[in-house]
Image 1 (tube, rainbow, N blue to C red):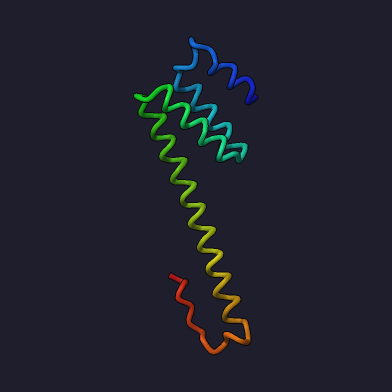
Image 2 (image 1 turned 90 degrees about the vertical axis):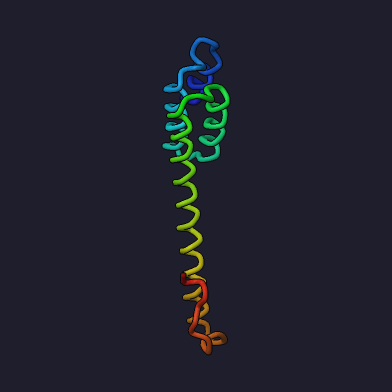
Length: 100
């Protein structure tokens, strides 16, 4: 499928169709390939810079990436706090500064 998208955007007649780029980026996101989706996004806005829908898709995608990163960081810090509170050496301090 990826080869078909690449072949389509290689054509001068179809590379300026925003819907093609949007579908390609959605395809990469659905496959869980964030880095590939980001590269497609950058190529899309370079090829079709005046298309608002591409920019909005990009902002939505980046917002999801930031949210996922924040959730992972929060889970890591909560686990770290739980570990520190259960550790006998650090049991003296039941306060975890990273919970907020």
